[in-house]
Amino acid sequence: MTIDILEYNRIFEDMILGLEAVKNWKKQEVLNVLRPMFRALHVAKFKWVFFPNEQTEAEHMGRETDLYEEGVPELTRPYVTKEYNTGGSRVVYYFYADSSKPEWDADDLEKLHMVEKLIFTYHGRLRLVNLVEERTYTDYQLNTRNLRYILKLAAQLVFRKEIYDYCMVCFNLKGFSLVNSRIGRDAGTKVMSRFICQLVNKLEEPGSIGRMGGDNFVGVFKKEDLDKVRTHLSGTGIVYNDETNERVMISAVAGYYIPRECDEIQSEDDLMDRVIMAVNVARHVQDTMEVFYSVELQQKQTEQKRIERQFPDALLKNEFKVYYQPKVDLRDYSLAGAEALCRWVKDGVVLPPAAFIPVLEQSMNICLLDFYMLDHVCTDLRRWLDQGREPVRVSVNLSRRHLGDMDLVEHIIEIIDRNRIPHGLIEIELTETTTEVEFADLKRVVNALQEKGICTSVDDFGTGYSSLNLIKEISWNVLKLDKAFLPVMAQSAFSNDNIMLRHVIAMATDLGLECIIEGVETKDHVDLLQENMCYMAQGYYFDRPLPVLDFEKRLDKQKDIYCEGGKREE
Ligand code: C2E
Ligand code: MG
Ligand code: MG
Figure 1 (cartoon, helix red, strand yellow):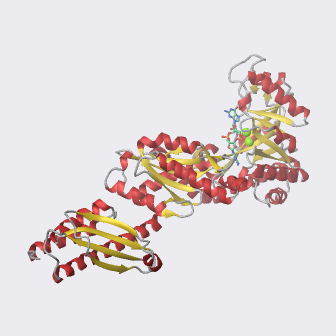
Figure 2 (figure 1 turned 30 degrees about the vertical axis):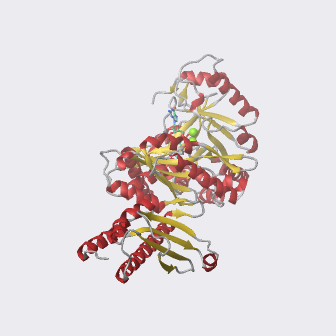
């Protein structure tokens, strides 16, 4: 065959470049690359047969792929070559000459052989690349994408500046260990996989979800799909038993980031930082099902980090101060006790607990602060006793974070005894719990404290779940009703609020619990309490939380401070 060598070289180079560029071994794509060469070499038909092993070859049980046919092929005498893969599989290639063209000479066959070698090599290379990619970007346990895949996708979208059309999500499945223990680990894995696959199927390409590990996932998807994602994550029933169709409800706590054109996004890391921050706030700070990233959220987090950083030093420097808020007996308006409330005096500014307690509660730092507070209260009580003053019982708040601490009670007693404080002068305030484990811990702690003669109170009763079990099962001394029970404006005696208040007070009294209400701000409140026979009150009507020197003044004239009009003139 006479073929111009320059022309042939050009076609050959184009073919190599084309094969290099093939990303997907699809018929049309490969055909486009090979067609010029086949035409130049007068190939009228080309196919290959793949045999997985020697036996299938012997039995002629191969998988045939017809790639190309053009013109009239000479079917009786194909040029046949064979290639072996490691692992025993083999491929047989068939080139059929164009019957209307001169026969192939030795030079032509050499060229065809070269073409076959290239097809074999590039096809194999692509399979290998695909295999490696598949392994790199797949979570084999769930048969879903993984974190690396989402990072790659996000990086591409950032690079192409298309990220502003997309959202990021990061989520943690809610209570999945409970699901596992209910239906078993294997069914749990199936449910997890289905939950994710169903979500991915709802997304427009290339949106996807990848597993980060455990029950944590991250995803990137088109903004139009946001509602679908939120609905799916807020709770979706997933079948775990295909025979009975039994389902389990799966939901997730999620953080979202919706990039805005004005946001600076340099890499996929920026996206990850923001979405992870959002999910952490949802899980550990706000305890909500979803949080959206915003600059304000970011600033708040930065502020929280600052508090955490400054805390150890502030503790050492005694920057935390005990303020005492009096509790008043409404029968004779005498000082009946006090609650120790923490203030952080930083650079001359007095910070309220709301500015730092929620942050400290995210770590065990709150426990250090609570012990510090108890120690300082005990120091004050010791001083008052030594000075011959008549101290009242002081309640100290204890975060729920302590409940898992098996040595908690010993620690409390050690502090009280080290300061030689009669146990009757200390009361420990604890808030309601939400989980069964915490409930058991709470019961253990309250019982142990009472054995040591230390009073315990349920703080903020009425704000949380207000489980009656909590007061039935645990033998508290004091029920502290939250100010939510008090009406903002005067209400009829038969309003729901008043009926609730009356019955809760009656129940506490009948159960032998001391009942105190906090947030008493007005004379109407006092009247209401007296009508309902609740005789202990704490609130701004009498006093705000006081610095220690001011409180000492109250201590010194316990009897004659308060009157029906609140406080007597100082
Ligand atoms: P809490 O234990 O329920 O304390 C009562 C809160 O109600 C105090 O807020 C008090 O100042 C406020 N309060 C008292 N009377 C009135 C009133 O008439 N009207 C209104 N609107 N509010 C009143 P504070 O001091 O800001 O403390 C907030 C919360 O911070 C406390 O709620 C407690 O949960 C926590 N906290 C304070 N100190 C400590 C501490 O040392 N350790 C722990 N773990 N938590 C603390
Ligand atoms: Mg309290
Ligand atoms: Mg309270």
